[in-house]
Amino acid sequence: MWRHVAANALTFLMVGLFLLGGLILWGRAQYDAPGPLSEAVCVQVDRGSSMRRVSNDLAEQGAVTSAAIFRIGADYEEKTGQLKAGSFLVEPEASMQEIVDTITRGGASTCGTEVVYRIGVNRVSVQVRELDPATNRFAELASFEPGVDETPPEYSETIAEADTRLRIAMAEGVTSWQVANALNTLDILEGEISETPPEGSLAPDSYEVRRGDDRAALIARMTAAQEANIAAAWEARDADLPIDSPEELLTLASIIEKETAVADERPQVASVFVNRLNQGMRLQTDPTVIYGITRGEGILGRGLRRSELRAETPYNTYVIPALPPTPIANPGRASLMAAAQPDESPYIFFVADGTGGHAFAETLDEHNRNVARWREIEAERAAAGEAASE
Image 1 (cartoon, rainbow, N blue to C red):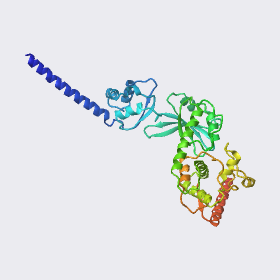
Image 2: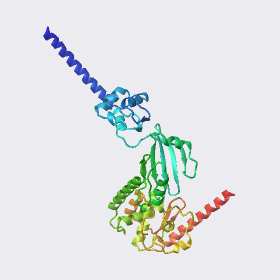
Image 3: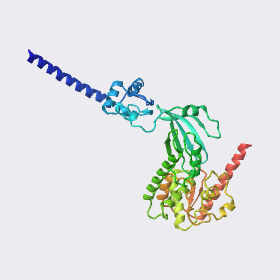
């Protein structure tokens, strides 16, 4: 009898183990399988939230088929205690495993609302926007120029939310004074930038920040990023460049940055300046003269005078036969690489062509024809402007 009972018990145990193994395999398959979402959703994880609360929210939004399997999988991977606060984009058909990875790895929020402080060449602006998960595009909620426009209520409401993403977007071609001045006015940061960083030493980019971050620490991040950019460009430079140091490369890149806003033109503009340096010609570029006047503290706001083009200053490349002594702005990676690897061209002249780009020339006669055409375009635009104002 006891032998029969033991045999039955062993059978039940084996069946139970078999069923348990099958259940585990089924649960694992569910955990790794593509999820039920047909459109992306934004999942908000509040500070102090639990994996149970998040899993239930995901189930309510239709992102997971089982909140329990989601939690068990997170426990199995030892990620339950790694839950991070923020707003996270969950892509269509994301598996439970992928969602767990998204909400536990940390880093910047990938959806929800954000405030972008844009430091541009001509102005500083603030943009409040929100990501639409379905289209993966941002919708603007408000935009204003601090100190000029009235602060919209959308900004005050959004900035008060703990999960709002904050970014500082520094444009290519801004000066170090413009960056320092703008950062000193942002009320989300602390500390003070007492000295303007060296010109060209800050990397144009988008920087994630938090309320209360130190301004000097942010400048240090920008500086480290630019040092890496310069080192990479210097390492990749053409062997026959008429450039003797990374500092000269940076200066040339800053001139390229200020001369064209057309990305594809940068290597061609670089070729003109390299050709001029190789031939011992003056660079003859207006942005350096302007920098010599403003020292990068704001924009000139007018045309250059003949006396300024003739004045012998360290930054007047119509007079000096070389690069100016320092960069004239903070160039981005593309301009640094253009300076390091310019196009091979015969051009030594260029002038605006009315499209936002430039007309390039090999000879002075050809250049003069391009200049004459540009003067015609300027006159036509001036006449059209006067007619429109009448």
